[in-house]
Length: 508
Image (cartoon, rainbow, N blue to C red; front, side):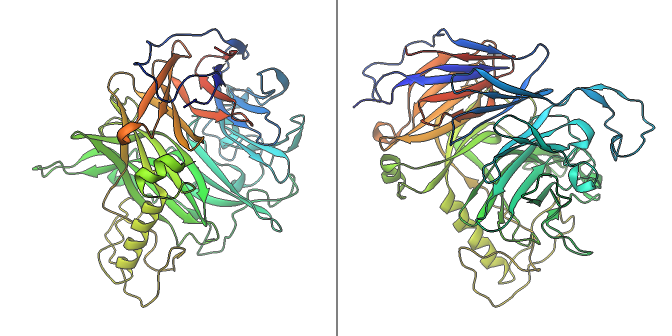
């Protein structure tokens, strides 16, 4: 059986372009030691770091969010146009930012880190949000990166003052005859009074419209947002929610998160802080956020717990893996990478696992929890949002797969962890990124690592086990960054590292 052909390409600060050559899905011998192939290289400006990467599924053009710059690249990594976004004079304590009113804080030349990069296909524009001025966004024309708008005069225009590229995640929900919505999830860096941790915003047709990024709904009592209560910081002073991945599926929007919580170890009366990975779900049409539910996720193999989420990607099952899992080939699967333990967020252990979640099973578990709560069983169980346990209230109603909540029993937490299916583990070289797709009915995953390697894994290997059939040293030093993307024709894979260069390679 022939495998997909792959060339290898690299985007270095790094974009790696992995192209298709030929190998076999079922190698007759163990894969050779990792090797490094020659790459065509694109380098960014000195002192720039690459932050985010998206590929236009219609044209194949690459949009690259870097420190102080946005790049538009051809599919073979040639620069087509750039747009400068920084640096500029700023101070993170200036709220509102100095471009709105005078700030008495000392100003300094400050880099603009790209925190979110999304393609708005309906209006042919790029949404590029940075770290300057409390997190304002630019709307750039896809063709030439001409600035169509840069709203900054309202508090809704400041998404987050966090100065990290992995701190914000956005999901666009598109409509044929209405303005689109933008769901934004962000860390707040101890400033919950300024920034909601999750919200839904208007994406107006006019990039300069006054209502751009306004909350979908907002009155005196209810709004399309959730803020972290100040009481939460008395329990966990450095509390925040770190958003790793987001997507839409069916009638829902999902975010995958890491968040601290206080737990009592077995046999102990004192509590300690750990980090828990959770999936958050919201109805796309829920303007009051009554449908907010979160559920802990993780996986375990051979007695080892993998609980710190590193990366995730939504893909389809494919015919071969679907038969093994008892699902349909077109069903959504979440491919996730977890590192071992729960105690270290920033310095994760090297032991890591690639795990699969069946999205329908997660939704079924959420439905069961909603049904039990509306029978009056248990509490809302959302410690960070409801410092005190609030009992569930009984109500006679039918809760089906698309139930979107009421102004009772919400927001809601699930206490029991949903465990993914571990398919591959790595003990020494922590996995840092993942992307997957179906090729000729087979489910294939590509995993980046801490040391800069890229692993090709056939998830539906013989006897139901995953099969690693090639490892390449794609960047040196690593790690491979979280954002990866396929080219329009799936003949190339683009991968980023922390260095300021972009690599491409021909057929092996």
